[in-house]
Length: 343
Image 1: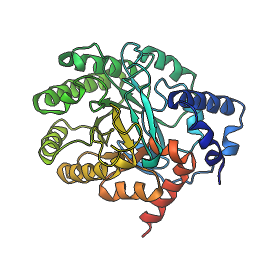
Image 2: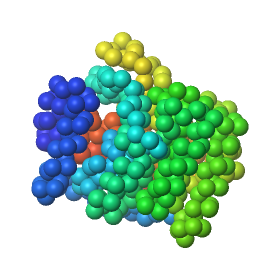
Image 3: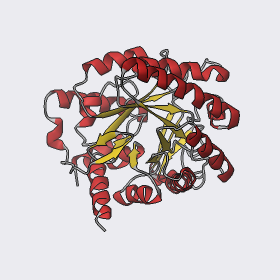
């Protein structure tokens, strides 16, 4: 039994959001004392080049854990091949009323309706100046809750401009279920216009800065075959740099009977695993290798990571798996991917 397995029952006795903040704070303290790595397993190298970036391994931390980029250096000690922080919005916002985070231990799942709670992009930029992390860092971008959906592109472009060249990549989040109407951006004319605006801004910023920074798009698992085909066509048309599949699900299949199973919000963890993998496979076929895919959703063991790669993902990332399995999951996934690549 590792240290996290001993600590988890104690953390699970606390309110989830309190436990979250307490853990991040203590991880940062341990890192600053130079002690954190002594409690963590060593993760082997498994280099992979994606989006023109050289990843030390293909296993990353998904957005949502460190919304404000306050614990990047501590989280880097876990051995992730890349870290994604956020979601961040142009202006600070408190998010939805509490309680807004719920554990479903019997399903190895979490439901959240956080609502892009964060201290704003300028605060994140200040935190980035204080980090010593030199690895691959992404930032997840959201829109402010009170920005009309028809002006959502403005919020993404503000964040893109401020972060350009300061991180490895950014992700345009159009799939959170916790901001009203946000998922409408995944459809037809709205998606076409948004992608056009993002790519136009990216091209101008690339010329201004003399360097290229990739932009990924994060999509939902709740898509049918027609939606996937239509979205894939637009991703190819606009030459999107990467796709993150997937975010949380609105479905409650298999958890309705559990405590908190019918809470409003996005469901993550084991119940979304197969749905996410199906969406990855469908996009992989539709994109014909033109857009790399980062697979997320329900990774709780090494075999789940290899299944995402087998379905067509180039990289994987998780968050809920870390809550249930702890830091050992990073090493387990990297070793499983290394083993599968030699078969």
